[in-house]
Length: 193
Image (cartoon, rainbow, N blue to C red; front, side, top):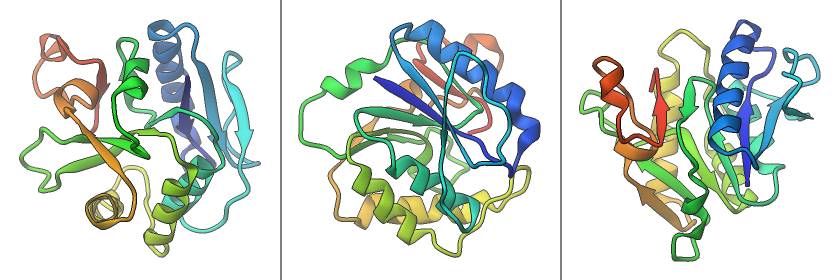
């Protein structure tokens, strides 16, 4: 199984977050292949990760998805503010011929059923087509421009042509709202969510 994080020149200050997220993934799944997807001028890659330079152009959301579409095989694509707490490779053994598995949000204030910060992918075409749907939608770290990208993701998951498995966000994309005890039972924690 592979775990892929995308971080490029858009937010080099998050390199420390990338390293912490990668180390957590490796601790939870020692046999996983950890990928840092980036652009040629992206931040340094931690020594325990494999660097994959992607050559996509355009807004951040599109670059990220086109980078995802270049990865073959069963891959968990996660944001850098995600911590994998336990081995989740069993998701790829769940029944069905699904192209991607996404998580339901457990944050009633979001107004959106799904969050793109944790996506289990099997079919690179899913990400290529999703990239077509975000053309012109840009995303900047630290502001609310993420909302347009998430709305696009939700429309694509709901109305797109691909088979999508829905997972419990409380387990696979948990956004903690209280203290450390709030992450008990979560396999994947999404700190900003």
